[in-house]
Image 1 (cartoon, rainbow, N blue to C red):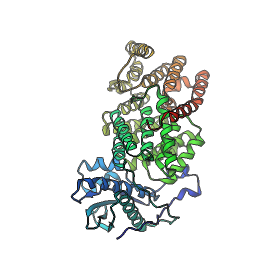
Image 2: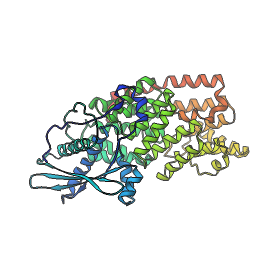
Image 3: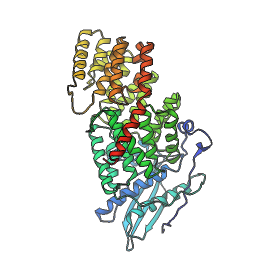
Image 4: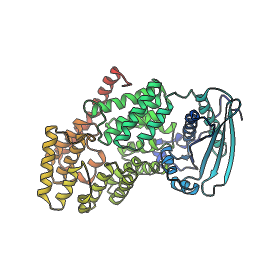
Length: 511
C-alpha cells in the first residue's frame, strides 16, 4: 500500500457535549491495545531510530482516537524486559489487542508489516503492509503511523469527525526526546537528571521542538513534587518559573500538543493557580489526547481542587490502568487515598510504587503516614525513611518515645535553620514539610505554621496539599490563625511563579 499524503482521521470524543472534566474520569473504553516496539529488520542499525519513531507515532495517533485504551510505552517497555508470554503481557497491561510490527528495506524505500493480534489467544486479527517510496525518513514515520491509525479506526465502531491537518516533519531531536521521556518515567533523581540532559540535547538539535520543551517543563515540575535538587540556582520558585516558561514555549510552538497543556496544567495546579485557568488547560489536553496517562493523572489534581474527589480518584485509577508500571501513577493515587482516609489503600499503592522503583523515598513516606494515621505507628517507626527523619520522629512521639523524638526534631530544626547541607539529593522543603506535620501532630499550631510558611517560602509545592488536607493536620486545622495564614500564603504563590517565569523567558527559555 502506498501511503497517501493526507489521511482522514477517525475520532470519537463523547465529552464534547458536556464538561470534559466530569466526563473523562468516567470514560469507558470500547477497545484496548498495546503497541510493541517496531522491529528493525532492515539490516541497518541506523534505521533503528526510524523504527522507534514509527512506534512512538503509532501510539500517539491511537491515543488521539478517543475511547481506546492505549497502554503507555513506558509500561510496555518495562514488561517486555520481563520476557513475558504474549498472554501474560496482555493481562499485565489489561488490553485485548497487541500490535506487532517489522520494518524492512525495499528497492525503492521501506516497508512496514503490521499484525494486530488477540492478546488472550494470540490469534491474528488482521495484518497490513505499508510502503514508503521516499528518502525522507522523518515523514515516513509520521505517514506510516497515520496510515495504520486510520486502518485501526476503521476496524472499530467510531464516529467520524473532520480530518486533522497533515502530519508535519518529525524533529531530528526525536531520538534524544524518547530517551528523556523514558528516563522521566522513573521519577528518580537520577532519572530526572538524565531526562533533563536528553531534552536539552533534543533542543540543541531542534530549538523549536515543542515536545522537548514540554518534557523539560515536567522535569522541573516533578523535581518540586519529589523535592529533588537538580542543579537550578535559587529556590524552588526558580524551578517553577522554568517549568512554566517551558510549557508556555511548547504551546506557543505547537498549539495542538496535549503534553504542553498537561505540563502547564500540572505546574499551575501545584502552584495554586486559579482552578478555572488550570481546568482550561486540562480540557484542551483531554480533547487532544484523551487516553494519555499523563493527562488523566495530572488533570485529576484539578478535579480534586474543584472538590470532585470521587472523579479524581477514578481518573487516578484509570491512569494506572494505562500505565501500570509507572510508580508515579500509583503515588498519585496513594496521595488521594491518604487525603480521603483510605489508609490501607494508600499504604498498598505506595508499597507497590516502591517495588516498582526501590530508589524512590516518596513511597515510603506516604506509606509511613498511612500507617501512622491508621493507628500503626510501630510499623511507621520501623521503616527505613532516609531523609524523612521528622516523619520518623512523629511516629516515635506517637509511640510514647518522646525524648528520642524531641532529640531528632531539635537536631533537624537546628540544621535547617542554619542551612546546614543534609544531602545532595533532597531540598530542605522535604524537612520543612515533615517538621510542619510533626508540630501539627503534637498540637502546636504556631510551630507548625512556622514550618508551613518556610516550606512554601522555599517552593510553591511547600507542603503537599493532600498531606496538609489529611488527618495529620486535624489537630491544628481548627485554629483560626493557622487556617487564615495558610490561605494567605497560598494566595500569592501563583503570582510569584508567574513573575519568575517572566524573568526566565527574558533570559533564555532554552537554558
